Image (cartoon, rainbow, N blue to C red; front, side, top):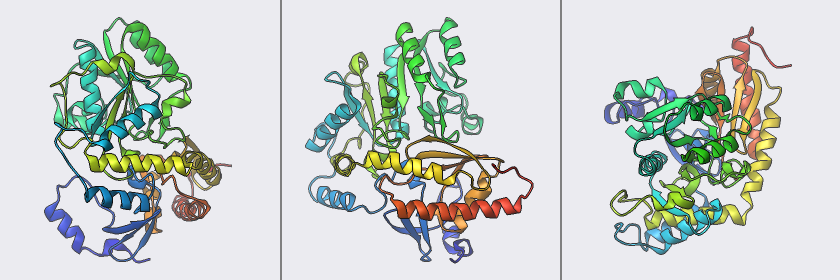
Length: 405
């Protein structure tokens, strides 16, 4: 395959016309299933899925048909009106999350907007209490969500940040110390699996203990399921594997398989905190986005894709064991972190890209994959072949690095 980086014309255009916020690896033109093609005709196996967004892959017939049909009928109305698509989606999300009749849904446009809404929920619950997140968390780059994302490189240019926020280590010991310390806590906001920290799950029993402590101390437990939600882990929501009920969850990414949409779903008494005038969104829950999300949910149910997520996730994790530079794997379903024996993730990602495989390196020693729920044996085999080639190439360039037995 030709090296797309030799084609400088689009890079020049991007440098001239787009904000300089990060490098771009290729100029992609189209996609189908788990593959995308750039303008030079190079094909890539997409095992990042738009960072856990393209749950049905690219150009899925259900997605295409739904967008076309709904766009020809009604695409947007103001929030002075409701639409059948919006009401259907809200009811579906309540049913899937198990909120019961008391649950409520706010439809937004992105994960960071859903998390901004969750911050307001916490403030309405207790205006004077702390909102607590975890070290290594990523909740978004807007100003409120950024305050809950304790990464100096992200936060430092924008200080002073929103007050009344702190982070703690992602351990049960730190959690217990927090609530034993006498500080007033409005909400604890956590990701069941920290995607940007290298697909790092919380310790066993963490969510159960968090639920106990937040209930005892009158704080909200808010789960950021932007990456883990909507089937990514093999459950509709990751919290369902832990046997707990949160006060709220935030959603986005895979909820509409590539169409921008986010949501806050509340449980119990938290559903009564918002009142008219406290929040809204011009585009949130528009009939086009809502129709797509309804179709995506229906397709996942009709094809039993949650079972496929679980099966393919186990297949992939077993397949990478023993490959050069692989220490172990972590995550759940099709949100998988592959921990390397050395901080060579950036080189592995680059080597994979050169061979036509899209993955990413959220940390120096971890590769993240989040492919479509629709992958089968062919895509798994192609991934293992290309990823194995990339690992072997990097391992050969660093012969002294430790490899697993």
